[in-house]
Length: 306
Image (tube, one colour):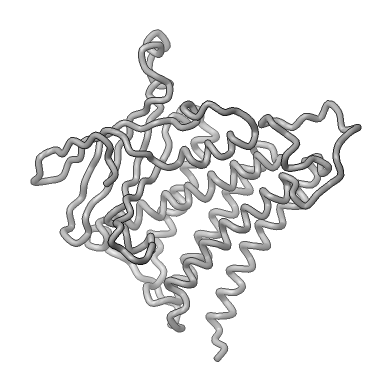
């Protein structure tokens, strides 16, 4: 039976896809549309000679970047539909969650990180596809912000309700991403995420594994040191502050640990591999760390997973 919420959610989904794909005319004006996905090997486009450019193909960087943007937005909507939004229609409602009793704020930090990740991934893909830094940044900000708004609207028709604080945290993540691009000092700090997946679970439902999430703020120490000290600190080694906890016991955990700049560790260079490195670098890999929690002794871990 057709309900209005089915129509509204379809519009939300299609709007994001349309917004993403609508970047194609802009990309086409900037990119050499005759370039192939496998042609360029540097981060900048070679415009010195186009006399021998191969024929245009569907698998150009401009199309892959555009489709990647649509897939990222559409894939998260598909996940939301399968988990929350297909459980029946409810009138739209606002629901203010208590951050201190609902998932001990892990959910809020998760909202911030996801929009930060979405913004950065789209930004990197569109740069890789040929847009200028400013064009890719503002397209990424627009798509990520609209995506967050549409997602929270969908929640408003679901059993949980729309939480304005969730949206505020989403947009904060996007704002931090913009700040990192526009103010050089903030580029020395980056959000990361790690997840230890319990093997005894039979379903990989990220939203049900919040007790296994760690969200990090990682600092590029080498860039923050006085110039005369930088030779003594490896440029790939960073220091990160992590936040995690156990919602069942309402226990928050704070972590001080090392982190790695994968862009410095992975030796390969090139336009394609640099895109992969930038995306991978938004994840925290196991490294030494110390966990702190109220009423517990510090826990030292050689390779911290969770």
